[in-house]
Amino acid sequence: MEDDDFISKTRRKKAMTALQDLGAELVKLSPEQLSRIDMPEDLREAVQAAQRFTKHEARRRQLQYIGRIMRDMDCTPILEQVTALHAPSKRQTALFHVAEKWRDALLAEPDAAERFEREFPGIDGAKLRGLVADAHADRNSGRSPKYARELFHFVNQVIQERGREA
Image 1 (cartoon, helix red, strand yellow):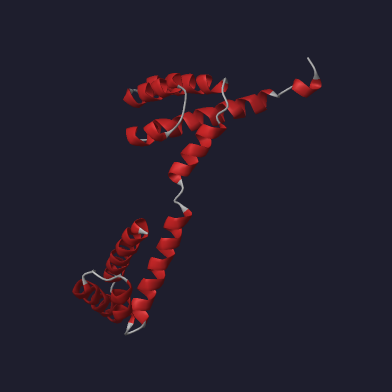
Image 2 (cartoon, rainbow, N blue to C red):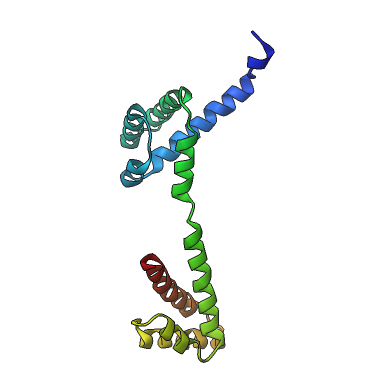
């Protein structure tokens, strides 16, 4: 055996554990998410079988089997696809930050509700103004920021919907 080809037992175990962890992530996916992952058919069948198992030991053995299947393939593309499923897109994050700025402006500036309605025509302006007033009342009375959260959810929903349309 050449020194260049030598892989320590510890490194091999870590690699196998990483493959089993990736397999466990695949098993946690919904059927719709799993259908979007590009993978060999035998791996897909093993993952779907693991999703049906309820007994701990059966599931553990199936995860080991999934790891064994993945040992003979390049799993980098599968890992990238699973990571992409879990990570919010940069666009969604940017829209979330826009919603936060609008919420802060609505709570700090008296004319912000009018500007928001002009920028996003067709929204329920009465609901927006009511949420802003309720959020101010919560803040002034020292209560929990229930209405500030509701205001944020309203604003975020409007912005996310318009972001999808753009």
